[in-house]
Length: 296
Image (tube, rainbow, N blue to C red):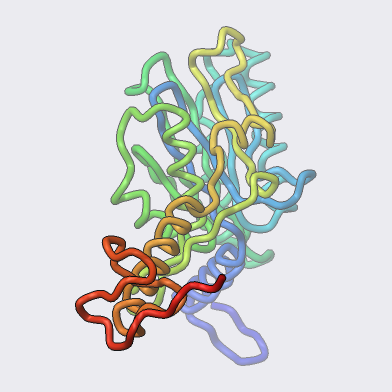
């Protein structure tokens, strides 16, 4: 029982209020996509800040991604790095697993959410680990209240998670190459559905505003985490502006159609719409006035 200024508050209402508080904070953050491709796991986020990372390395084959309050999920990331280092040093590096780290995060988040002495964390987390094959890859999603979900293929968290997940659901292909998976994830983050089910105007996110990292099992180093530079992203994504050639072709076709229509209805003034078989100065079968002699 909790007694405050408003009197008695039931435990159910208290938990609901704390959950609503956490969800509102998370919804204000930009989405993060975790996606499985042929050679590992891909993490993509829209992050204009070059100093504050949403995606980071935890251990050799383990990565961490988060959305929400930066100071809160940064504390969790640091705690995860320390836990992994201590376990790997005390036992063996192979004893550090993504499942163990996800369980530790779940206990921490669950304890904070259930405690009445502090506010719940406004964060959601990804913990990803790659294995020797795609079937052994693991991607865990943790919510603000400590719940853990084992995701397969792809997962989305953050502000527009429903729209991004819906875009991926219709287009995701299992075992895709890295370039294809990256283009799909970036397009999904820029997807903006319209109201009442109508298609919206998708955004083109600048390369400088993208944070991309992968766990790549094909790397020869023990550490499989790699962060993409803007130059590498630009080389993979290429020119994402609307097709200028198609627009020019459409405009030219429209202008030609308009000129033809004008020539048909407006006579032979300025030579538009004239019959090419009739030489200048001759009278066509449909001409309504005598020819005009050319100037000397």
